[in-house]
Image (cartoon, rainbow, N blue to C red; front, top):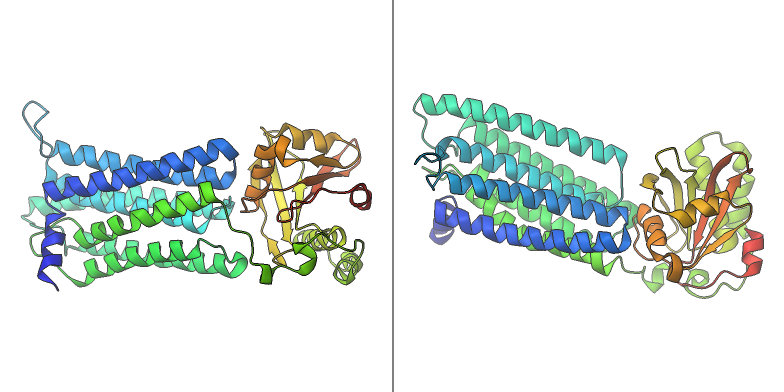
Length: 406
């Protein structure tokens, strides 16, 4: 391997280089967290909140690692320092793996997903437990005269765990791309590949006499600006509109006809042939989207006692795609709750209800908004939910004829 790269890998594991690594990474993550928090405060959208959470937690982890690194060099405890050879090697692996988990979780799952969130929490707990076990085993190894952490069994296990987690993140990104074709996929994919390259080099090449993962840290320094770009694109720029070639002519312009087209008629005719609730939800959203020429149709449940709503299913007419269900909070969405109590259709304009509409489209993993119709389902005594139609791309106003049709 190149001598300059080898010297850089060794230097980044020593105190001066380690401080530079922490400060650069902390600056990048603080910037990402500030951008994400600004986007969340403006839109209150679930996607922006998840970015803010991931960036903030990642920054706090790096800050804690920086403090402990400094305490191993500066005598503050009665003239004593923390024992760096014991604390820092397992700490670097644990913090790096937790950051990896947060970055991949934010990149692959921008919209709330209960399954993905539960898996991420369980993996986080497992990483923390692994860190505790790693410290105990490394303390025993040091007592027996062990020298460097790199190349040890614990180091190999951490490296394989990080590489496996990155591969899982890449698979999740690919699956998400196959369903929605997000514009930020290249950024997330390159981020994961850069991290995987650093992990692979660390596993393949042994750096004698070193205990910190230099190649992994170099990869993190390269990946941090990519994470910043991902946060900026989602929190501020928002998702791009689908290309004109991908949008039907009827969705790109003011619709020339309304009513039951062939797809809507077929979908409605199949309502009695299915007993699967998920399939029924898809049939309803597809039929209503085509019948009303709604670029986005969402099927919502009524809020529960905690104010949580379920996005049962959504259909993007422009992309001809279904969007998986998720959960979002309606506690701070008074216009939506009021619309659910009405007997007829309610119209919500972006100028007056922008934050609520951003939350609604954000639940579907989108950022654009447009004039929206809310039609409650069920009778006055028992509201089952609502259908929401949004002019996501054309931003056209809904006519009285369209409201009557809905």
